[in-house]
Amino acid sequence: MNIDHLEAFMYVVHLESIHKAAEALYLSQPTVTARIKTLERDLGIELFLRKARSVTLTEEGKAFIPYAEQIIRTYQQGKKLLKKGDNPEEIVIGANTITSQYFIPFALPLWKQANPQLRFKFISAPNDVLIDKLLQKKVDIAFMKDISHHEVQQHELLDNSVRLVVYPEHPFQFQENLSVQQLASEPMVFFECGAFTWNRVHKLFEVANVDPRIEFLVDHLEVAKSIILSKQGIGFLPYLCIKEELDRGDLIEIDVSHIIKIDQHIFATHLNNGFVHPLLWNDIVLSVKEFEKQSFMFTL
Image 1 (cartoon, helix red, strand yellow):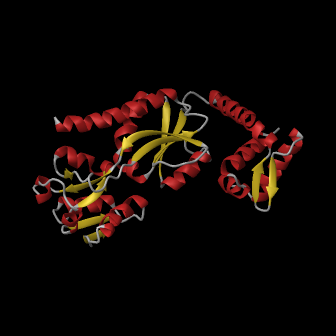
Image 2: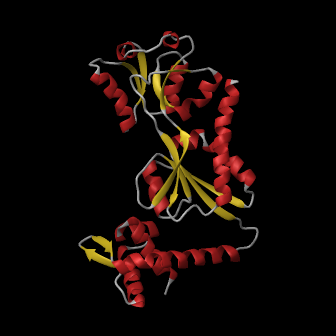
């Protein structure tokens, strides 16, 4: 039994496609198919039912998964054990764009300080790329939005709710229970990313049958924030992007929860078989608390 054949099997299991497994392994599709067939001959069973371009696990294939995982894991642990002491174990952290820009620079040095024996590799990527890298075991843990996938577990960590912010002394700072009509009358910068979350802001005005004064349409959070800081407009922005400015009082949050409330969070995401660095996991949780505490200290 060849370890490469087992890895090919597990890649097909996770990606549910021989074609995708071949791409992930940088192999041709016939090579992956051949490895699966050789493994099936060695075991004397069929692991997959093949229909056209799709593959489905047989009952024997499902039963074999934990054994294949155990063999691969034992092999990988043996490789790590035989490495020289001056070649530290590598942990690969992934994060979506907003987490990469606003949380990771704060947290990564703390993780390294608490775990000097680890070498950290960091990848910034969109959420769909991160989930693929997790399934391919190219990332150990990813910080990303909420997703639904049977192969992963998620733990809610960071508040990234969308909030209406204005510059200091803006008239809205001293008003309560703003109406949609009042919002629509103000020059607005709109962060355009095509996500469902931001479409909800558009829908707010559509339902009220009013046209907002969108003076600036941008696709970069820092550009949107800078326009608001320069007192050229107001806007809805995610919390991680504006946390420091809110702490310092450079931006003011306006409560509009009576007309719209957009809750969203950043989740720590890993495969179902668990995150293999329990001590680092504790440090991740502590870094989130430190990150939040920093905000509290600014407001004292």
